[in-house]
Image (tube, rainbow, N blue to C red; front, side):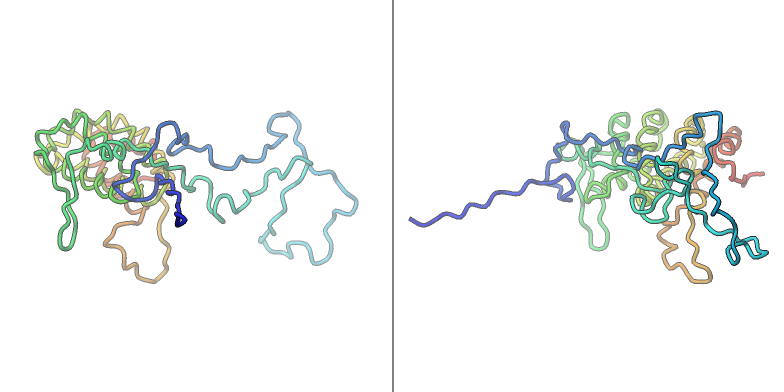
Length: 307
């Protein structure tokens, strides 16, 4: 009798990238998308909770020696953080967990693969499939877009904006563009349901996800303006600036500093700072008379393009 070689089948992960894999999200993914729980805790300053200020103990050997002063210049050396026995206080954040010199505000937040779009697509509830073309792919809709229930489908597609794997990322993004182009007259009543998916995508602080979301926001604001001339969608977004704009205020100065070199990828429009500025300008142009004052309140560095 020959020995049978049995190989145990490997467990499929949620990030395999195949459209035939089933993502088991039933209670297994406990990470909140865009949450701050994964960031390292900051050191506690004891003097922040008391009346007296805690300083380092004066030592007789702690005095300026020859060659250790400023030398008549204004260049101060980097002082080491004080240690009171409970860890560094008032010093800079340690590199490593935050990725070198990155500040905590720019660090990517968790982005688990538990979107509603992924769940609906794997279950076969979305009337879409990929049509492979010669140069680019596009979506083949099994139902006319005008007959779709936008209250049901459009928030699902917007929730897939934070997807990074294929085919979910392509289907979600391209599906939004198709629905905005063919059914722009059905978008206005659905605006309140789109805010939480947009906010969640921006809160991941992933540059790839933010670039996609900003381009979709630009298409969303101009959807009805290009077709009918009435910018009602842009005006409907004004009450929700408090949920959308705080993250844009953080990344508005996130530009590429290349000196005198040429950025050959400008056609791809992946520069966050420029995209945020373009998006805010469209918000002001199509948001009505109250748009600028609300943008200025949340993004103080923004300058009007209408005045």
